[in-house]
Length: 456
Image (cartoon, rainbow, N blue to C red; front, side):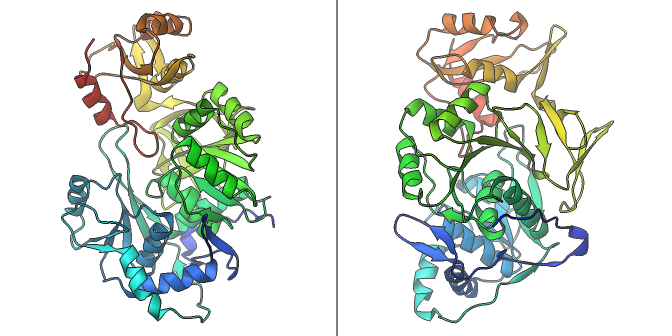
């Protein structure tokens, strides 16, 4: 049934259900092997919750979507805050743990770490003998309860912590469901992105809990795996949640894909050609999400039809001396955006570029993201990025890394047809691959490390 747009206000601190709407026998999580209902999930959740110690903060580094969901919700019900690190590396966890004494880790596999860790897979298997067939009530959670702290990947600098209340996460999910899946009956979300990152959290975990969607357990990576999962889920409407990097790989693989209900993309801008090719590949409409870690998802657009972004219901933008400020009832506080926007009316805007992304060379301004899109649009370029080298000087020229079989001279000739000579990369270097993370982003540190390892 169509979902109405439901605005949640944090000021009310209302009790919000963990599952909305609750339908005991409705499919909650699907895979090639099995289907788990909402009632199954609540029973597993009760067993996991009972086996967890008391702590203020819990690292959630589960890779399997179902174990991540169980860990996330069990911590929430135990009044523990989910710490969502940008990676599972030992050093990363140890660095964050210093700021959250007494925390422990929930994983679904053995990981290298210096803090206490519980294997959720083992915990659930050992608790199966205590399972009950009784119907369990849906837990209610205060809207203002702190649910998670998400750590940025450091794509624009040092990773930072961002607090998310239950009401903020639930409110965003309901708005996204109204925009994307409100006209679909029991859609299945298939995602290539991890659940730990904000985009993945909103479009997988929270859509299953609050968006009347069933979630596919797999996190397919390679084009053939994505094709297999989409074919297996084709009995119901399917929405693919992905990134420009994955979509480019899918299109270039030229594998026949089934027609699906929709494609959602985020984490980086899409060029027009890739957006059109994606729609042709999946015989459906592609829509992009605009958002930031501070405010979450804020707006969407049909990429092949318009450059304008449409705000989600309840959001408002105000231009101030310090930048554009975003407000919404479900946000704990207003957010000053790090992007340059051109406000068109109360509901629409154009994205001009990130403040940290804008460069000035010889009195001329350009966006590094836009320059990167021009590089990626060259036929024969598999991946590429413009960025500024580590040394910061006035009128600093951008450099570029590219994955391509084309000669450097030919790539530069193509770029010269699309941009002012001031912005041509000095130099452009070829590499075998770019160090993208799970969501397809390139951190500043990773780029500078790779750059230092390359030679002209």
